[in-house]
Amino acid sequence: MRSSPPLWPWLLLPLVVLLLPGDARRLLLDLLGGITLALLLLPLIGGGLAFLAWRVLRSRLRTCGACGLTSLGGGSLCPACGTPYSTDGAPAELSDARNATINVEAVDVSDDPKSGTPGNSAPPAR
Image 1: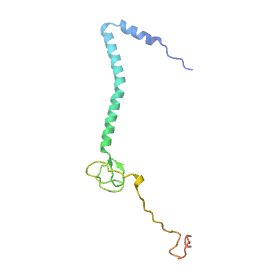
Image 2 (image 1 turned 90 degrees about the vertical axis):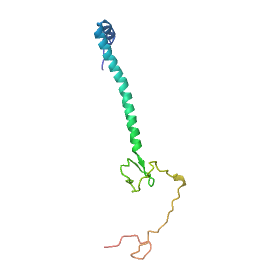
Image 3 (image 1 turned 180 degrees about the vertical axis):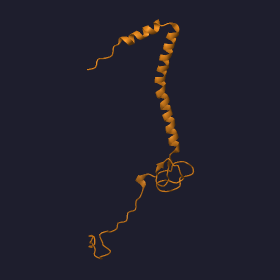
Image 4 (image 1 turned 30 degrees about the vertical axis):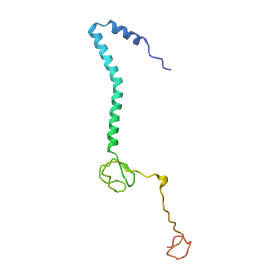
């Protein structure tokens, strides 16, 4: 089992800083302050840069008015269906799927047109 590190170096650090001469004490405090400031500000700066990058990426996304595909839209046509993107730059309004009507036509596929007999779905013999 690991033993915890000794606590005495951390307790002596403020005493050593107070006993140092003026210029050395100021240099050490400035160094510690700079490291602390960097450790606190770097995550905030990184988060801000990530937020700006996400906003730029979202501004370049385009939505196809015909199929609804969202892509980076490098060209003027949708890569999925080939429909030209709208010129106003706004994403197309998608209809609510609950109100959509689907027309279905039933076709009997069990009739074999080659043999002329209904219900014969076996493949022809070779």
